[in-house]
Every structure is written in C-alpha cells, then in structure tokens.
Length: 368
Image (cartoon, rainbow, N blue to C red; front, side, top):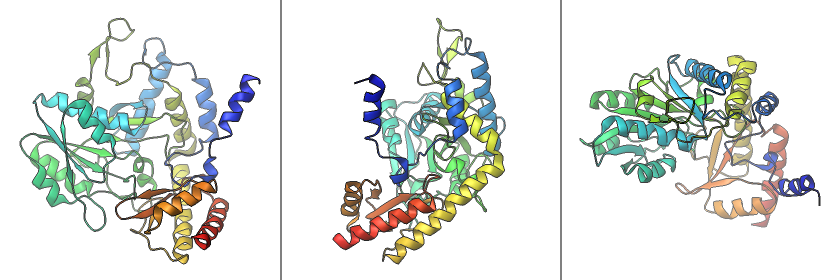
C-alpha cells in the first residue's frame, strides 16, 4: 500500500467534525489552512532566524489585546489552554518567590490547574459554586490566606460555558494584593462578540493574565492557544537563558514552537474582523437556541440557560445516551455534577447537522 493511501485509511477512521458536538475545536477557516501551509516549517523558538514570523506573533498578540481591552498586553501563542494556564501560574509563583504557596480556583476550573499544581509544587484550593455554577465569592475569600499568590476565574467553563463573577474576583484580588488569572480559553473569542458582553477581561484592573485559544472559536489550525499578560513584567518571571540560540533568553514553556497557529489565527481575525467574528458567534448562538428547543421538546431540562454556545441537559441516563450516540457514529459528552449530557455548538454544527442529530436522538430514545 502506498504510504499516502495508508495515511488516508487511518484518517478515515476519525470521527468527522460534522458528527461531533463535544469538542471546543472546529473545522479551521479556509484562510487559516492557507496560512498554515505558508508557515509549515517555521520554528518560533529561534526568533532571530524567523524574524518575520516573530513580528507577526507580536501583531497577533496586539490584535488579541485590542479585543480584550489591553493593547499593551504581552504574551505568546502556545500549544493550548493547558500550557497557557500553567505559564500564568508559573509566572505568579516565580514573582512571589515564597515556598509552600497556593492558588484558589473554582471547582469547575479546567483540570490543567491540577497539572499546574503538580508541576509547580503549589497547593490548589478549590472553591464551590452557587446554584448557577459560578464560583462562590464568599468561599473564595474564605480560602485565601497569607500563602495565596493568585485567584483564578473562568470565562466559559468547559462543562457549561458559564462565566464566573470576574468583576468581583478582580476587586478581591486587588484588595488582597494578589494576581488574578482568567481562563477564557473558550470564552475569550466568544464573549466579546455577544450582544451584551460580560466584562471578563483586562478592563478589570485586577486581571493580571488571560488564556485565550484561537484554535477554538477563532477557527485557527491546531495548535493555537494563547497566554496574555497585562504587561511585559510578567514575562520576565518566565525567562531563562538560551545561549546557543539567536535570542539570549526565552520565556516560553516549549522550546521549538510552530508558527502555523500564529499565522492561521492572524489570517482569520484579519480577514473576518470584529463584524465577521460577531456574525460567526451570532450564528452559533442561533443554532444553540435551536438545539435547546429541540432537545427540550424531547423531554429534557436544561441545566442552566446557555451563556454561550454550550448547553447541557439533565439526565440520569446521560452516560448511556452518550454511549448510544457513539455507537451510531456521533460524539457528545457528559458532565458529572449535575448528571447531564453536554453539547457544544461550534461553527461546524449547522442546522442540517442539528436536524440529523435530533433524528438520531429520537431513535436512541426509542431504544432505551
């Protein structure tokens, strides 16, 4: 067998995105694919060689900063939200220099903060949530002590797409004299384009850093995560010497870094602009409403009113429903608290996809 044919045979075993309502990634925008091809052999880990690509990354960070209310933000494009979250906490830890420090995160925070705690040898305290699955401010404050170096809020929780009370968390962080990191890996390129966007970003003075992933709703190619800091000083706490490269220091976590995510993210945001992104988000929200109404008509109750293009429905049979969908070639996910099925309505989830999904859902329910 020809190697290309062999590769095709493996690729054909993947579930196509048009049957996936669980992923926060999507089919890249066509211009993202073109940009990706142009930068396929660039290593941003050596910026003195790839000078143009390094300048392009700076322009992208500035572009993201404008969207997130801080044109002077500093940062870089990384592998994804996990790396971004780890780097934010690493910067705070190095800035603090104390031993046996801790951070306070919502219990709904992404598991990457557990990784950060393990890698960086810091304690991760978890605060409970209210009836709307937003972090409980009183519980956050009760967990803060003299070893707490940072708070974490989430703008677009992985399970429900909920937004924590970032405004109040920011005020608390300022009051305590500690940093606040906002994990907006998903929501960072959704919330700004909603009709009434919640102020989750650098508009809050207490927000020190923010995770945003262009390879999610930014429709860039994978990998294209992002970490943005309020100013360049936070990057200084991440620097190590790199004597054999064209740069004297390096603040990234990985050494070798592709420029494909930078180029593809820049191309999409540049071509679509704010109005184009708003149109994409508006379409996703419209389709989320369709999914909500169709699944409710099947007898399911929503967990919360969708804040963005994620919706979950309570069900004691959630795992069984998920497994039945998988048997039929579809992928959905479940959450444990409360027990529910979870659906993510990305740009690839069109009205036609929804129609086929609901038809399959009806067949599954008749078999249960």
